[in-house]
Length: 263
Image (cartoon, rainbow, N blue to C red; front, side):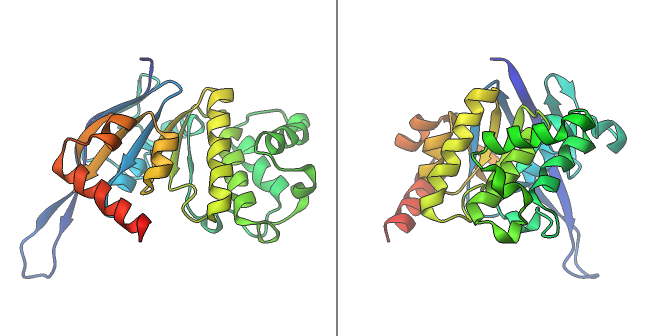
């Protein structure tokens, strides 16, 4: 397996102190996390709220600093890179957020939003920007007529397509998907997921996919890592884990999610 992302014994500790009289406590947001994401592969992270999924995403993106461990992208150790050095690698790993209104500037048009990452990372020449925006719109199944609109004039699904367009604009090969469809209507979720699958095949992308929805995980992921209290308690083939979980926590987690979905 050609490794796109490799994480080795990655940990993030926080010091918690409830009052000036209490003792300091070490909180493990992530503890000794080890996994790989291969070329054209999707690894799903599942677990209860607070299990450490988003912490892992933020560590991989180097939005927060690890306490210890190692992060490699395309074989390059990025664990301790300073921000000016890390900036060179940010185009290689992008993120699709859950809520588009926290990402898309409401005062920017779709044209401006798609051009922004192209300019920041010098993806194409100035003279090629308009042509590239049209190409991105076509790739995320949006019409040219949406180009001059603002986020407030678009639907939730259309705005999420803009987020996806910004992610692929940089020619990234690894994309972190943080609950990318949970804020969308059920009728739109399938369209966006199928778009992500299509782009994965066309652009040879790899995904680190965070979701609480087992149907989404089954549809999207090749492998799954199950998280509890900052640790991975089970990892393996997606179908194998969902159909025959081995760890007691995984069994209870799957049962609880299925119960919620059937009620």
